[in-house]
Length: 440
Ligand SMILES: [Zn+2]
Image 1 (tube, rainbow, N blue to C red):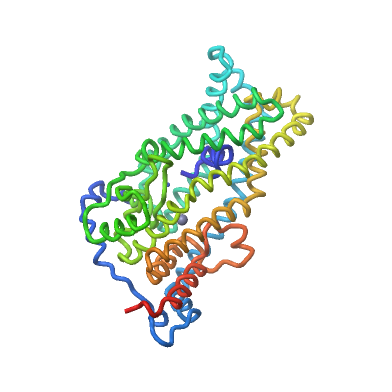
Image 2 (cartoon, protein in one colour):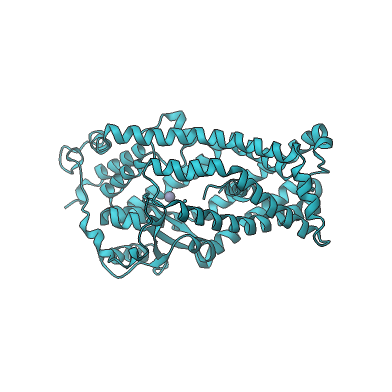
């Protein structure tokens, strides 16, 4: 789900998808994960001569030259795609404004009913559909062909397209509601709209977080409560020990779309839940699953989701202030040609989106840094709770399938929204070194 509308929506309210896996995959016994056992490389085994740096290298060396070159290329290509996507977006905005498409969409929307909120919603729906169509060549390359060429995708074209259409419909609905609210704020608050707009966006994001696990995620994947077994028992025990509602551990069929292993915390208040994906369950050892669950529990206990939303609300206030400033200037210069009246005119949405994308493109190190700090916190929490230093190091190495293992300092600063694989292995081995006595 990396459509333009998601990018736009992310920009506006948060910043914050061969053969299809058989649908009866989840009927398999979850105890199958017992077949995978944790492998600890020789240089990382506990003992009197344990050395953090040697142990770290032992894990890093698990990655073959070939696999390393592959994940480096995947990640570095992703950096360029961020630039191409940004420039492509500016081109789409220019096309909509300069060719008069946006004013035609607005004029059409104003013929439907007499309420301004309805005009905004109708314009927004057209905007989401048209930008998604214009972005489709980039979307299909980035999210379908490229993912398949790196063996990260599992879907047939038809199944992938089905998810895209579902995503588009969700985008029309949520994008429409979000933009209707934000334009309502712009009309009411006038010059101070950027402050109120950021506040309303935070509330909107909390609402989307609240409904997402119940109404949005199930549109793309099946979610199930983790079945009885040794793994469930150990996860439930960790959860109870950390005051986490014990029925909130779910798993989902991510293998429908991807080979990536992952887990997440989603929801807000009554809908908050920790979910792990089936790739994690089937492809990794119990120690690795525990290490990952410890990390996710860290997000939960440390209220990382709430903190992130509030942090992004602040960044967004700056972003909206930049839009408010830039919009007036751009309008003074080109407004006449574009037929855009003022910032409250929906015909100016492509300009609004372009300015916001410039802000967030420039703020990439800031937004990634905010997320990375919270991820590092959850890493620390997780390893202390699970005690699975080798499990966590092994998982960090598995993530190198799609994340460059050892980025340079500047590269990490700009592009990394998680600690790098090397940093995570090193942190785990440091923890292991300091906990040697407690090992059997
Ligand atoms: Zn995390």
